[in-house]
Amino acid sequence: AVINGRRAVPGEFPYQVLLTTILADQMGLCGGAIIDEKHILTAWHCVEDVRASDISVIVGAIAFENDPNAKKYRVSNIALHEKRACRRPGQLRCYDIALLR
Image (cartoon, rainbow, N blue to C red; front, side, top):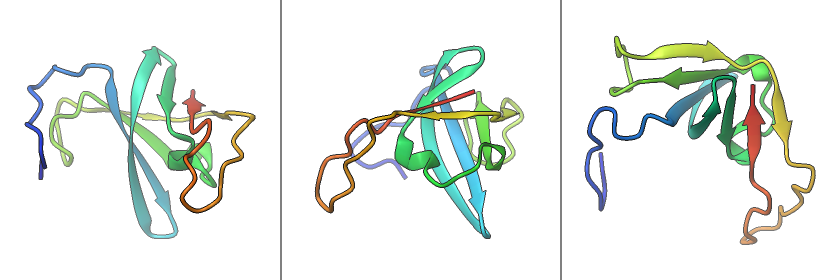
């Protein structure tokens, strides 16, 4: 469901990707942005405690499931920001960025 917004038109955000992770029978979803043909920028908290091999990048999806336009890629490496230190409850997430390859 879309709340306080509108549905995106196909192709409106070509740099947006869907990240999926699978950890112990739980599936996680996050977004990311294409930097170039081999790199995706996302949030640290999306990939924290996740192995690169457990992350899929889905490009070109319009619908979440069984989208014939979607292409799925595996992640080979995760680079986390070195200054990620803000972990107290209620504190803003400092340097909450990660780069995927």
